Image 1 (tube, rainbow, N blue to C red):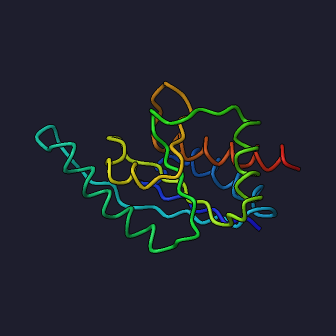
Image 2: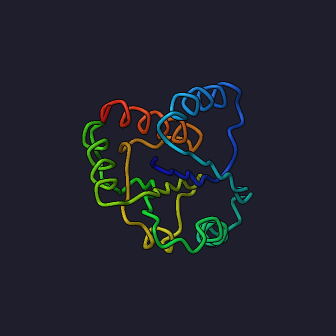
Length: 153
């Protein structure tokens, strides 16, 4: 069974996002072992330097990643590679065929991810050239993981 971890900054605040997440977690439970790690996002104002905020968030992400060497790290990044749903499913299938059993996805906060986290990534993934909230991306990611499992089946 494939093990997935989603590390995300911030919580799902609105009930409709929590309900959508719960539905995809239920659907995925038969085929995937999934863990969601919510990290507290840094609060900031216009006076704060975005780079410092991203560095603080990167420290939390690195702690959540741990020391695992059998982990394939996929970060969501606006400059990452874009896939169709079929291509994404094939990518996951290829990884499992290569004996990768643990995939970790990282969703950054409103300012994005620090360069130090981007450098750790095995794959940078972009869903679109549009910008979406990290809450939306969390549900979109779950939907695409579910869709990938259905395509594989």
